[in-house]
Image (cartoon, rainbow, N blue to C red; front, top):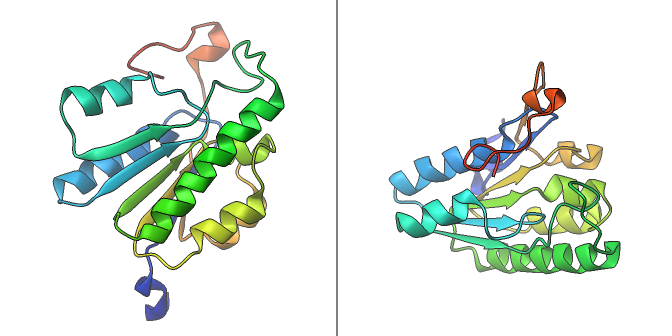
Length: 179
């Protein structure tokens, strides 16, 4: 890679149909705070009542986490109108734009943003405009359903591939493991 690329933070994408995308991003966040870096997590689909929120609060981890989601649209029996999900995702995107523009964070995780794009809750062109704004942060995008346009801007893409998953056998999401 040319040296000029490193004048700005890099863009990471964790995607695929396998388990571990958010978990990988949270592992990176933990490593970063251990190195004294400033971390923020913006959740696009998830509500703010999951285990990562509880751990950050309980152990007073020095990172910000903000959820804008109102539930998993079209998944797990969610029956809220698409417009409500679009409004929530748009608020998350506006917040992401603000923190990227502020340029005070070292790590910015946009959790489940790929799903928000694939469900057409937000526009990929807006995401590209925001993640390519001048900034020194590493920007991490998670979620299945990676839009092909985002590949051009990523410096790292990790695809979690499902070989076998207990969900397929009827095991439901478990607290502390999936949420």
